[in-house]
Length: 78
Image 1 (tube, rainbow, N blue to C red):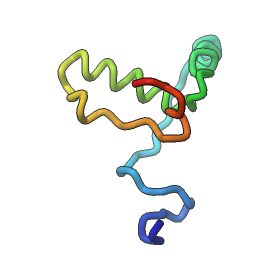
Image 2 (cartoon, rainbow, N blue to C red):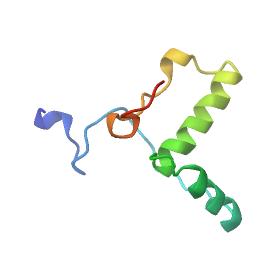
Image 3 (cartoon, rainbow, N blue to C red):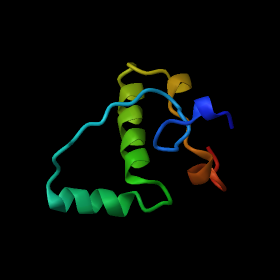
């Protein structure tokens, strides 16, 4: 991997992102944590929910969907 492909945090660059904060009631957050246990991070789980909704609303093409990282998609059929 070329050094220019790594940002200061040491993670490979995928696409520009923004840091956002969302306030969620504890009871809902606990359910989200439980639902995301399928070896996905909570962020990837939430991103998949958002992308699913945007595809359903025809605001995002399936081909533009963010690909899951290879770490989380191993052994999964897509």
